[in-house]
Structures are given as structure tokens and as C-alpha cells.
Length: 278
Image 1 (spheres, rainbow, N blue to C red):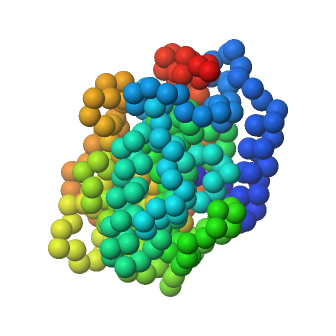
Image 2: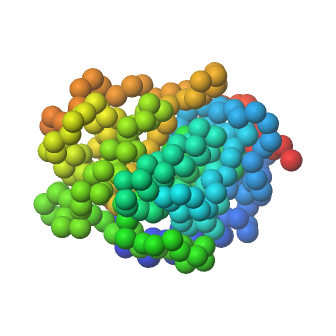
């Protein structure tokens, strides 16, 4: 989801190198909080269970998103980050169908969570609970072979000088966000402030979904969807609801920061058993 402002291809290359180094050189550490959650081989079987909040959590019973579906295709498959709570997998599949019915796509599905959640070695602060997914703004690609989906360019659609969406921004981009936000499971959708301003300036028959779209830096080439804790997930900690209203007043500029914080590794104690289970 969140990267320092490197050119897209260089960014993918660096992230891939870091991931490969970590996976080859690190195993599980006995010191909880320092382990490499990216090294776990797969999901932990069991009833779906989210333990913690989006920025500090682990996951039991995760599902892997199929790489191909109606209206979508998963990208950067080698990153091993297309896992989530079953509710998230269902949400993505339904979004793909809605986009396909609207006559555009396929959408590109980026990072979700690791097989058991937990902090990622690179790229994200959140995405730990299996309720977050990145949907790219690229809508110009046909269905690709799996090997052709690695390291694709993510064009930035916000002009850093004017802090406005550029000429590549289209009606379909706005419709994609509307479709993504118009689902009762959605807690928030993060986009660049320029994107939020564009959405607020448009005429919509129903504007209630705009409340769930929040401005946040480093979201000028993708939207980040975060779902609410599903029913029955008593150990899952929701983010407070966004403020009332459309959120269309005094929308800040959201330039990319020079350095982005590292993910927290302060997970609930119960996550140690999730990590260690064979």
C-alpha cells in the first residue's frame, strides 16, 4: 500500500530484493515481535479468526484470493500477499462483478495480507488483519498471464505541483471508487486528497458513500479498501467510524512523505501461537 516516492519500477525491484533477502535469511525468532511473518508457509487452518486491529493483528483461517476472477486479476503474485478473511475475498469478487457489469476493467488487485496476517517486512503499516486490500487505478490492461503481472508500472495520477488529478483521470476511476465504497462492509477507503476533491466535485444521486472515502498520502496510484470487523469476530478491533458528513470540506493536500513509518510489531499475545503453529 504505502511506499516512499521512488519511480514505480525501481520501487518494485527494491521491494522484491528486500523480500527475497528476508525470506532466505530469516526464520522464526523466539523473541515475539521480531519474527518474519512473511516466512510462514501458509494459512493456519481453523475457523476464521482475526486477532487485533488493522495495524497490529494476526489471522487464522485465511483464504487465498483466486488469481483470476470476473472483472479482476491479482498482480504481484510472487509477493505472497493475496490472503484475507473470507469476507474480504468475497468483497473483492463482488467488486469485480460490479465493475464487469459496468463495462470496464479488469481491476488490478494488489496486496491484501500475508497467509497469517502480521506485519510485512516492506511496503505497509496496516494490512495485518486480513481486512485491507489495494486496488490499483490502472484500468487499461487486458487479462494477463500470471508471469506478466509482476512489477507492473503504477502510474501516479496526481500532479505533485498542482495537487490535482491529471489528464489521465477518468470517469471510470471515479466510478470504481463509488462501486468500491458502496458496500456496507466498508469502513474506509483511502485515496489521495486530490482524488477526494474530484469525487466531491461530481454530481452523485447518492452521496452517502463519500463519508467512507478519506484523504491519505501515498494513495495517488491506488485506492486502499478497509473492511469493518465481520460479525462474530470478538477479538477483532475496529477503527472508529469516520466523522459524520461527506468529508468534502477543507480537504487537505496529501503529498507523499520522504520516509514512511515502519509497521508496528506489537501484536496481541495470542498471535505468538498463530505464528508458531505448524
